[in-house]
Length: 220
Ligand code: BG6
Ligand code: MG
Image (cartoon, rainbow, N blue to C red):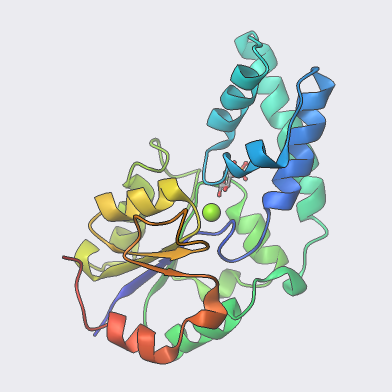
């Protein structure tokens, strides 16, 4: 059966949270706001704009629109400086294996990410060619948990939503997949991703038998 396999990027294909952390921390500290790993966790899956809004809220700070835009681009410049050093060694375990398996089976593969840097990152880790469609933060107006990004991805690979499977590491992303009426697979901890249809610690835990099984069922 033809299915649409939609992958989130950050936290699913590569672990960029550490670079987001460094860039947000430098930025927050530069305006006198603390920034912790726990706060960084809460920004997973959250758009760049909403992330800065949250940081300002945590620091009880308000900025002019102009300052806000300046800080967003400053953060991104620093983030991109980390991205520029990425290579294939940063692909998370067994991601390449599952992508190869799916393309051998002729299954459509799409990216559904909140990031506006997704193409640069996929290029750096040499995975761009694996995707039949890329839908990211540049293509959507409503951020996850809104299903827009996944609905667009399904549309681009021409697969009905109930035949789509989403791999996500964030709560907002799982909610978006569920709202889109797609099978949601959490990559991470069950305690965090309990709204997902299935949860795996990482791709090393996902067998080809599971992929075959999932290819035969529809979202209920
Ligand atoms: C998500 C990340 O995938 O993309 C978030 O989990 C990030 O941490 C968001 O803020 C937007 O990314 P970018 O690359 O456009 O700043
Ligand atoms: Mg993610």
